[in-house]
Length: 139
Image 1: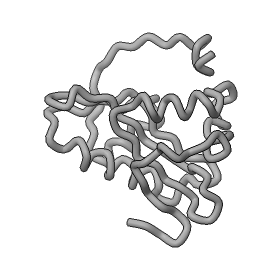
Image 2 (image 1 turned 60 degrees about the horizontal axis):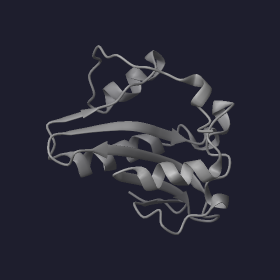
Image 3 (image 1 turned 135 degrees about the horizontal axis):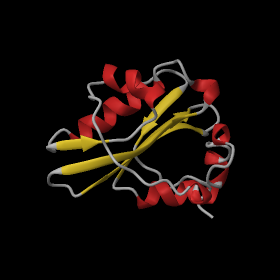
Image 4 (image 1 turned 180 degrees about the horizontal axis):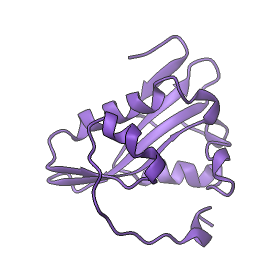
């Protein structure tokens, strides 16, 4: 699914800092653009939503997997000005298609996002986590 404005791609090799600048703007203290590029390159799978006019990344999803049984989706982000247009849902659909051969695909999300993921086929579950908020900006 591509509209005139949004291009979905899996290649992040040619991205520059300018393409991802401000991507975590709603986090308050999110990773710097250089660290966002490192997140993309360190992930097993990445799907990007790119503004066809500017080349700016407007959303993305990443997955880490063993390639045999399990995958974890650590990030799904869509710039606030682009939310509500189905971009996040499309990114999830595309990632799930890439991971469909696996037994389990897990993610953790805040409670207010559970309804979004339930609409896409995920089920609420009990999990455990550690959050080092002093490391949220990746510095």
